[in-house]
Image 1 (cartoon, one colour):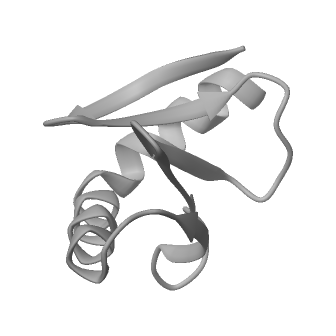
Image 2 (cartoon, helix red, strand yellow):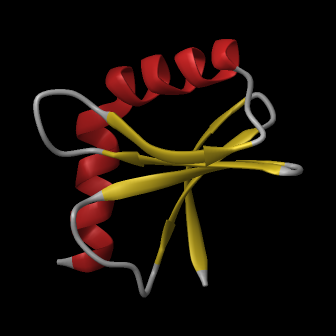
Length: 79
């Protein structure tokens, strides 16, 4: 089960309820998914499937902008 914690156009930023550390979000769009780590010096792409380089830049920029809010949601969900 997952919780949508943010949306950007057709992108859904989700956190899985039974997921593991380190804190991260999955970014999903039809046929595509990326996993972005939220902790560390800056958000880091862990892996991705189907997104173009331009889409990945946009995703990472959005995660940088929303990072603290996304981390708060991770902590609300995972304690």
